[in-house]
Figure (tube, rainbow, N blue to C red):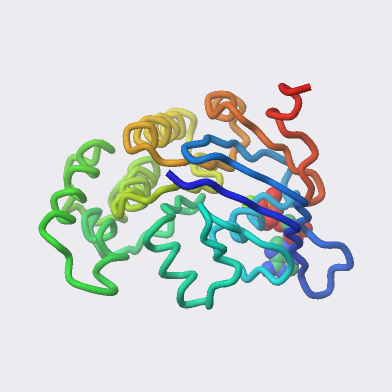
Length: 228
Ligand code: ADP
Ligand code: MG
């Protein structure tokens, strides 16, 4: 489980006068569950990319349980993410031509040999995510199955946090509900912190805490509303 601390974070893009993201202070305790909502263009993905180190942060700091990733070199930041953060994206980021199993283990196989225990865990995760035939080519699966493979991949290295950016947005309602259910269930079982960007109000409600972004700022934090 990882805690997240953000302070003085500003994200700016060339040619845009105002920062697209501006977060003074934000804390999520270890094991916390968070929904991020907000209109299209409000800065949700920029926030996700900043806290996962996918995007370079020049202004402000992002720490995970004391490790300030914004001070790490790009290489060390990538290594930190690979070890600690399970990512699930709206458009899956899977590799055609490879099987479901091969997609799950690819991040490890790019850097080293797969351990027998990792092979077993990959097969276990594919089983619990409901992928009946792990050797099936990824492009022959349904979109819902593809996202479930991506969830299995995100969990393989036992990350301390799962970050999902609109994981159900490109799925039909039933497939989306199945993926949401899996994220909730598996993150609880594995004891990970869970952060989900979503427009699904039912899913957001089940995560407990919700922040709503507007023009790059936290316009509402359900925790602060509750504390008032
Ligand atoms: P959301 O995920 O909430 O839809 P984004 O974080 O993707 O919003 O985008 C926030 C704002 O930043 C938008 O106005 C978008 O056009 C702008 N933006 C995002 N990425 C870039 C980029 N690489 N270069 C320039 N502008 C960007
Ligand atoms: Mg987005």
